Image (cartoon, rainbow, N blue to C red; front, side):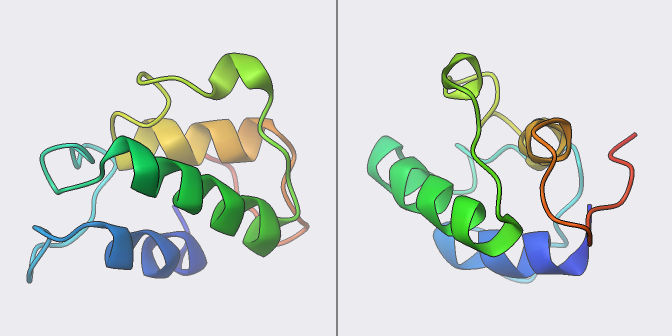
Length: 85
């Protein structure tokens, strides 16, 4: 995960507090709801110049920071993306 991603994601997580975001961070437990997921999706698409495919717009993709990051990387993203593995 890169810093732009974690910086973008953090404001959507009202229960994050001082915790560090890791690939295993459970986005729902940290406060991401369905409406925020839509707003986050638009922010991701703008920031990373990527369009997530419809099959990735599901609870599994938005389950953890790692699963969401992998979907962004798989979609191609911009040149600044690093390997998601």
